[in-house]
Length: 262
Image 1 (cartoon, rainbow, N blue to C red):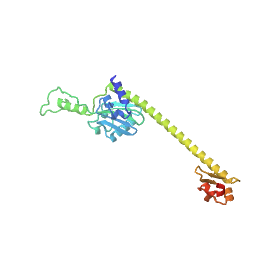
Image 2 (cartoon, rainbow, N blue to C red):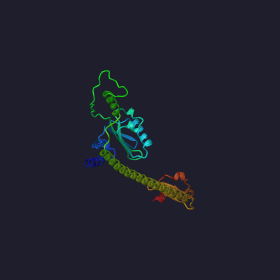
Image 3 (cartoon, rainbow, N blue to C red):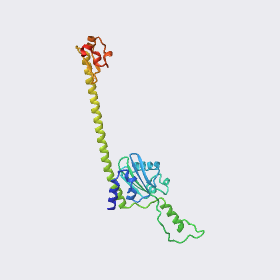
Image 4 (tube, one colour):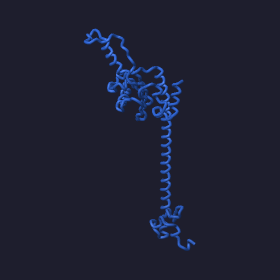
């Protein structure tokens, strides 16, 4: 119930960016030292995370070696085979990653485990060395520490359930957004096509009207709403003796004889 409440609270506010920019966020959903949302080629990070270059390397590695998987969880990127694991240092050892879409990802990162480890064996005596057959307590402890340095706390089943729930919800949400964006683009394309068709049709009608006026066997003139001449064919030019270039743009009343105007 707590997980469901957290999911609802996160997704009610500006999803998907709200899941990393507001509270509660994805680090509240699953205990981690850092988290990243890779959305539309932009990296949104929280806490301890790899650098941009390292994160891109992780994505490339996931795509190349886990192409059929929608996610991966490991308490040791080193053991999982990520080539750049040692360069991440102690800050990033474990990772849970899920793919939301072809280019969008969610990541949670954990540092190496810092739990108290008590060694119950005998104390190391001065001059005591491993002889190849027997590893003494202190040496064994150091070797064990070298192992846990590249390992985080494991990801529990209920944590992975919460991660997969968020993955499914975001996937559906992204699909709806993509469908809406696609529909919007289609509508805009159709409107532009109609606008172009309308302009082309208007231009064709205008050109035809000009042709008819110019080739008419009777004198024709045209004026706009302000009374300015915008059409003057060859017949009226012949009749009035006024060339078209002198008539166009003049007010009709200035071209009419005073007697006719009255």
